[in-house]
Image (cartoon, rainbow, N blue to C red; front, side, top):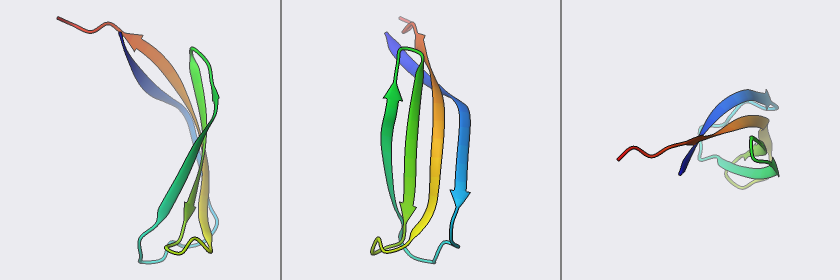
Length: 68
């Protein structure tokens, strides 16, 4: 059985303008149940000294039957 995920809610708070350089992202699963997953994420500049944005997502888990 496979699972697919649908976005229920996605929020992004931009704290600073993004510089023209590589960005780094961290994400953590905060809660996971059979039907919902909640994730917190952060965006950082190249040397991880400035936090550019933070986000939070809520995803619905849908089990799908694999076709033969």
